[in-house]
Length: 219
Image (cartoon, rainbow, N blue to C red; front, side, top):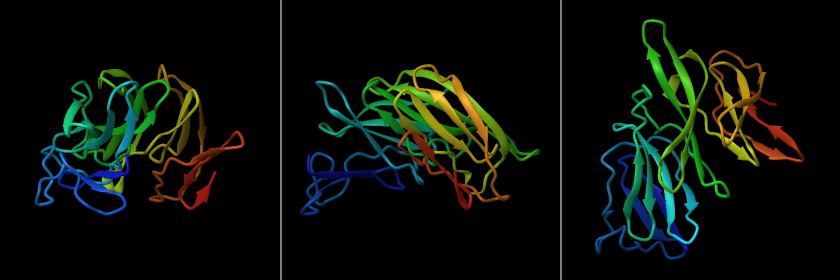
């Protein structure tokens, strides 16, 4: 609709006209100050968009403290839903360190989160989870394995292509293909990377090939 929307580090929702930079109501008041604050923190969770069939566009983003995924109605500047993952022992950085992926055709939001941290052993689990994009209802969750708590406390951003979601887990040095509807791991391969050489980016698919950044290399 010609506007730019984002959620800053203070989890305030901003909206400006892409051409003029002018504040967009109802997200901004007459002084250019955001009207919607989520009362949380964002680190590097880039928002994604889900277009509700016959309904409003929803901007989906993750936060920490509280650890939640949020869907913001871009027509009304209100929270359409939020998901707290009450059954997952999420780490303090919550959903603020991964960017959600969206499957528009199936109406699914997919992300990952660090969970089940054990500080004495310096270990943590990476969990992938899927939500109904329109309602925020949890559909499935899948453990991708554990390893040492990473510097920066970042979790991987998924890549969706067709029926599958592809996720590189630097903690286990594996790339997994998950069924988008069930969360079942269809296949998993081992990759190599130097110690501390983490890559959290989702990669790309082209010509029936998955290309993934792994440390200093491309696979």
